[in-house]
Image 1 (tube, rainbow, N blue to C red):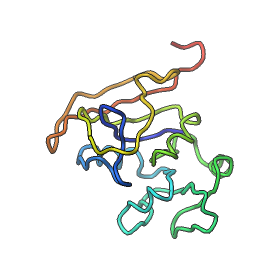
Image 2: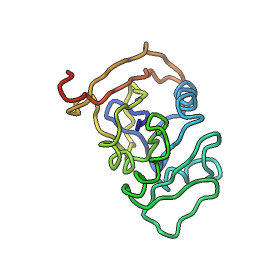
Image 3: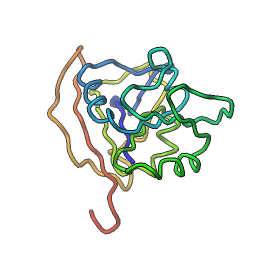
Image 4: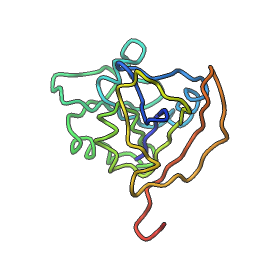
Length: 168
């Protein structure tokens, strides 16, 4: 399982239920990685999508504790255990956790790769965060792109991988 997110200098990922910034290169990277694959997200993240509808050209799985929630065009699971059982039918490399903060935290231990678009700025109004992968024990930065800039925001694509026991 993989996770994909964009984070600022403080590892903030959102504000008031939305993204911190809409950077075209980041959006393109997200589409390239997730299209044709399975995305796992929380109900609140789904509600931020246009029309509150699942992402097209992807299998959408919504993780929510709301037993009455349903979403047309998406599978709904109500616990991590139920999710893990449900995704057994998929290749693990096709699974992408896409948010929000609570879902990232709940599924981090099941991920082996994290694609993080690093925004080299700080958003003062941020209210949602992920783990600091640079300081997270058991993870290492494997690859980083050149720094780019769009809409006044400098950013790069970073790939973090979980360090396998005995492989430092």
